[in-house]
Image (cartoon, rainbow, N blue to C red; front, side):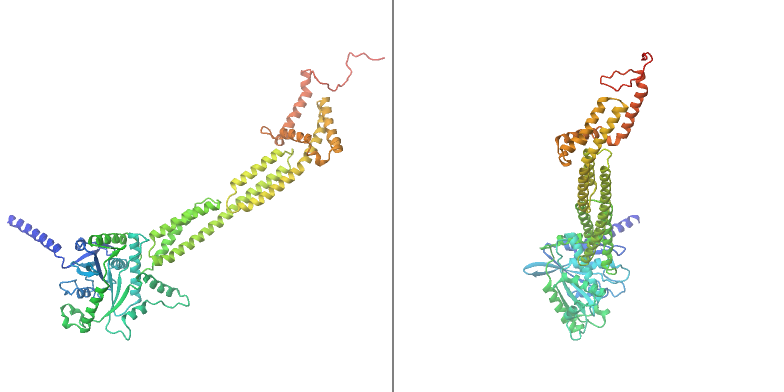
Length: 602
């Protein structure tokens, strides 16, 4: 019993393997090439369908039918292939859609197109607007069919609705977007031949082409209505299709739609049969091999192209037709604007204008690059791109204003500090040209180093005027103040030599200096010629060497040094001469007091 059970299991496995190999070998049936994932949000490839395509070595063309669910797409494909419902694509009358994903008829129709033997595959797509699916899934199916096909048949019942135009516009833009991501944004999208197929019995005085053209015509918008602008923008996005579209009407084959699969041609409406044959001829006349970047694709190349497109579609975050593309791109614009704003917000202002401009350009380029990577839709993205550019300019304007303010604040502080320093140098206790020049140079250097930004040029002009004025005023008063200081110094030295140190030579030298300054210069030199005299230059050089040098700034230390000298002299006068009997080499003043042993005179 156990042996017979094992034999039965092995037999079943062999039968399953045999049936599997038979199904693979028999390509005269439909195969799925793209299937939905369990969540019905993304797509995945089916190896059986890809095998049916990849085995073809000749150029490939594809005819895809898209449209709402339960609109007769599968039945239409069977009619184009001259197949019954039971041998061709599955036709369903249930509420849920029969076709899931994208299916291909395994046996291509061989045609001679412009002298080139071409294998034409027919593709059946899952209908959109069915229950239990997301808009994103529908859009991916629509876009993928748009990219894959050589002829795209848009199967619509009765008429062209605004929603149909919007969905097609979005699908074309989606296809164009991800085609660009795969092949490069600089590669032009090569759209399929679009065939508007309207299933309608009567057209009230106008052709189906006129009806489609009227539906696609721009809506006048003299009042600038935003909603009408959006409607016209949808039509603009179809411009990529150009004149590469046509329209065809097909009447209903029979009133009993649920029995169509059981009816023969002679039982169908004769007008339908006639129009169906005309449709076959129209499709055959517009079919061309699938061309990517100027090259027709064979089976393996077509499969490789399909894999890349599907990977991009599943990987990329895309909006749905239920939410406007502008809303999607608005989030991308805000993200890129924040990236730019964060980069600019980290700057330490003020900074040189050219450096700020360079950082702006780098940050803008990075933001725009991010936008190019994340945005959706070439036509819709144009407006979002312009919006991002305008908002970046606004942020840049604010940064420039902040930089100008900070530059003005810093330069104003430096200017005020330099002005105060110049005022202090004007009232030095001991005038020194060397100290003034050092302060002048230090002020210039600090201003040149720390004052940066757009306000620098303006404050530089103010600095030049202020510094020049201060220098002229200092030089004008310098000689006179120095002359007065020398006169006062000579009188002070007279008092010191006479009453403090009682050194007659010091007193005599001081008197000579005083008499020279007050009499000789006034008699023989004018005030102008005095300052140009070599003797005066010598006096000035000596004064500068004493008052201000790398070792000592006498103006700063004059009072402490004077106090120390005065204390030293006082100490010497009070205590030093008692301990040490001075032996002066030079004559000193004598007190001439009477000693105790001096004889009294008679």
